[in-house]
Image 1: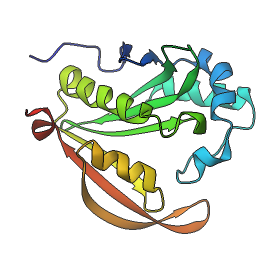
Image 2: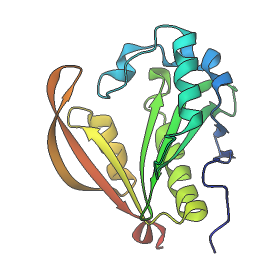
Image 3: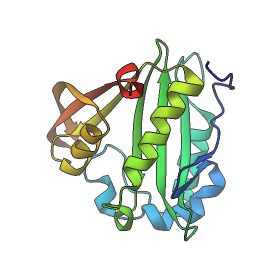
Amino acid sequence: MKTVVDPGVPAPGQTSRLLIEVLTAAHAHALHAVLDDARIYRYIEMRRFATPAALLAEFARLVLGPGGQATDTWLNWALRERSSARYLGTLQATVSAGNSAWIGYLLAPSAWGHGFAQEACRWLVARLARDYGIKTVRASVDARNLDSIRLVRRLGFVHESTEPCELHGVPAIDHHYRLDIRSWLAP
């Protein structure tokens, strides 16, 4: 049975190693130092935020959502390691009409390679299925981002399409992946 939630308000959560907090503008100060590393932005459209004030403005925009007549819902969380209470990054989902969602994450390089992204994404996919009735989850990954490609494949995503794009003024290639929730939830 699907839990009834306010579709515009994400709920907090936790995993064995993560506290998953609903993102607010107040997270900007603590997360600026965590996300202030150019390596994080190498394969994504977003640019590094020069100051905590710039990140504050971005978080305030994310919290407000797409606004207007948009049918999408933006869900955003801050990721915190339970054992140390240090912030590791952010987790996002854009829930669209038709029971589908796109997901993404930003993690500090110090958190790379420790399974935090996989743990957070597993939590997110389960939350999207349970609370939002999502049937399909998608992710877009730059073809050069081999770590993220390995991650989505480990999660069960399958390659759906490839398309040329431009990233920071340079030609690039995006791979689009799809996860069918029914097969993911099956034993």
